Image (cartoon, rainbow, N blue to C red):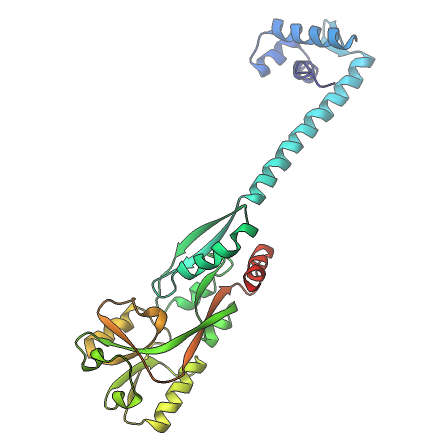
Length: 293
């Protein structure tokens, strides 16, 4: 039954006159009358009676008016629902990225499972590796960003997020390019005798605490200097400035161009994985499950 002339008919009834309806529709009163006449001719029904007080619906007109209003409301709801559906499918995963926790490893995951999320886009969200503010960044998983991919054996981090383990990075040592050990291809622990090894303070990382315990017990000739609980660029700079040795990870070999990273003859490593909120939304859970497979 839908006919574009229904619009003029409904406006005329709602406004009570052709002139007022014409103002609403930005056409002339004559055009409104012609559209209604055309509708009546098309339907073979008399819909409106013209009176001195304006327009009045006939019994047939009342039925058409009621159904036309329903059609308009239904059409409006249909368009709104379509827009909502479009918004639902125009989804974005926000991925945190920083110097020590770059997004590149996440991208490798994304390309493996992205076919399962055809309507999703990625948005990279930079953040600072500030040892004083990193915990507040982790707490924003689920708000500022959906995922981080990085090394995590910190109890404080794991109290604030979930982690899907993906592998482990070897523990290495870094020295400045001018350091006597810089030419070494691999370090024996005895090579570190008389050196000062920089590492995070005790109590938060199980792996680092194991290394510290081993060195204290079996290699007391290696001095230990505490760094802040979490590394940032200032820790790498201090290693260069002091000539000390820095305990670090293989994934950070290119963080500071003035440092040389050297493997150590030990079996220590730290886990890395996909970090996400403690109470993640359904699509984040779906992504995590896709990565698990």
